[in-house]
Structures are given as structure tokens and as C-alpha cells.
Length: 208
Ligand code: TMP
Image 1 (cartoon, rainbow, N blue to C red):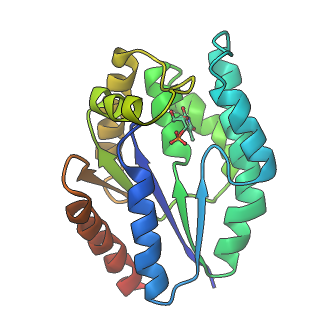
Image 2: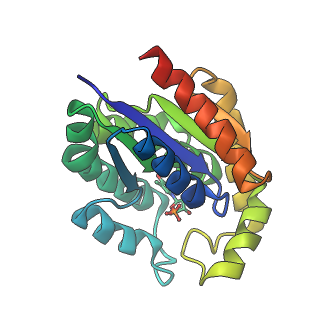
């Protein structure tokens, strides 16, 4: 039996973590076995790679290094956590996945989505999300929310123009993959967003 792979995407500060927790509670209460993970991270090795990628002092990091580090963290997470969980019939909810690379490295860094998907083919193979929830928020607004919470990491420290390219990139991606990516207005209340997310997830679970 194969499980269900759900990913949550959005610009920094879009509110993914809150919604992931609420979705997890909702599905657990319905009796589903849920595995949560985040990218970059989710395994000891991938978390170690995360500390390198997001280190505020590594401002000299090249785009290709960044792309490959994200892909390496992903390869380990897919092999160690995501693929086995799906093979076991579980629901995996992942905070970010390859679409983040398509948008941040492909669009905002200007590396192109073709290169990004080509590199990531090695990292994830045929493990692709069944549904992706995209929380749509203006890049600038998300960073303002983040600034209130904590010290910014290397990616969050990028310019307002970079974060605007990220939110535009997500909207383009959602148009390219309407069958998989469900875009939800991230400026609504937490409860309103949650009910739209469970509508999407319940619809796919009902067809299984
Ligand atoms: P997080 O703060 O949501 O955990 O994500 C870490 C940062 O890494 C965030 O700014 C988005 C960025 N990112 C990429 O640039 N490419 C990727 O492939 C992933 C997964 C995240």
C-alpha cells in the first residue's frame, strides 16, 4: 500500500508551521498515521546540512553550492524518512520540498527550473508530492512577520526584491501545476486557511 505525500510551500513567514501542526492534529484525530518533516532537515545529516546552508556568516556561498546542498539534504530525507513512510502507507507532511528549490534557486537566484529539476531528479527519484498546499503571501510581508520573531537566517537576509521574486515564482508554479498545487490566500485568519486546507486534503483522501 502506498501512502500520501503532502507538501506545504510558501514564502518565508507565510505561516506554514502553524498550518502543518493543525493539519497533523486533524488527520491524527481521524486515525491516520502521520509523519512530519521539514526541508532542509528531517534527518541528522540533513539537519547538519541545514546549519551550513542557513549560516548567516556564509555570505560567499555560490548558487550551485546552494542548489546542491539543498538537493543533498533532500536525497537523505527521501531515502531515510519519506520513501519508507510512504511504502508503509503513512501520510507524510513535509514543510517545503522540491518546489522550494524551483522557486528560490530556479527563479529568485535565476538558475532556471530545468536545471533545478534535473539535479533534483537524482535526489528524489519518483518520490513526488501528491498534493502541495501553497500559502500565498507577498514576499515582503512574510519577511516583516519573520523580523518580529527571530534573528534572520542567510536566506531570510536576502533583499526585498529577492523575496518578491519568490512569491511571484510560487504563483507561476501554481499556474503550471494546477492538478497538484493548491494556492490559498495566506493573509486570511488561521482558521479560515485551515478549513480550506482540510477541504483539499479530505477531497483526495475520499478518492483513495
Ligand atoms: P524554512 O525557514 O522554511 O525552514 O526554510 C529554510 C529556507 O531555505 C527558506 O528561506 C527557504 C529556503 N529553501 C531554498 O532556498 N531551497 C530549498 O530547496 C528549500 C527546501 C528551502
